[in-house]
Amino acid sequence: MVVFVYGTLTEGDRVATVLGDDADSEFVGRATLEGLHRVDGRYPTLVPGGSVDGRLLAVDDAGLERLDRYEGVEAELYVRVAVPVTGAAGTASERCWVYVGEPDQLGVDATWPGEGALRDRVRTHVSRSDAVVRNHE
Picture 1 (cartoon, rainbow, N blue to C red):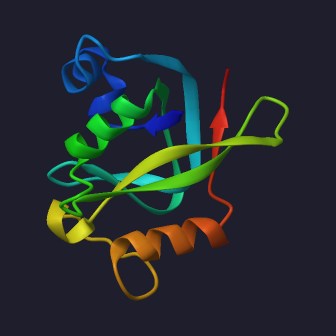
Picture 2 (cartoon, rainbow, N blue to C red):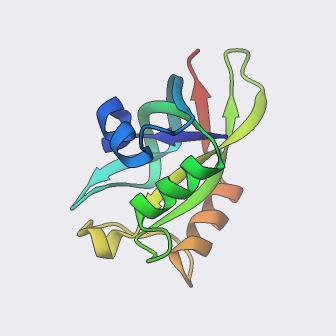
């Protein structure tokens, strides 16, 4: 599976530290996430609108579990959401995972539309928007 990374996980050394030496992972290209943009707080996160450049990181199931722990998914610091990926031809070919942080916990002055848990608001917004990861490879 593929994860769009846009912060500290764009660095190979950080990925190696988080995933460990036995991880089956590799960067598979550069990409742009359209429909969400990066804001910086204690850690980077995404909010509606704009775009952000990043990298696509291929991981196995164990790697995705390690990324979830690193991003604090269980503690609800970040949520993981699926976003469509388009290739050079511009057609949706697959989905990739994207991590979105809780603005209040990260010290970011931003809000997500809707009510309820961040997980639900992010998933609803992404499913109703034109958010897409454009693979540059």
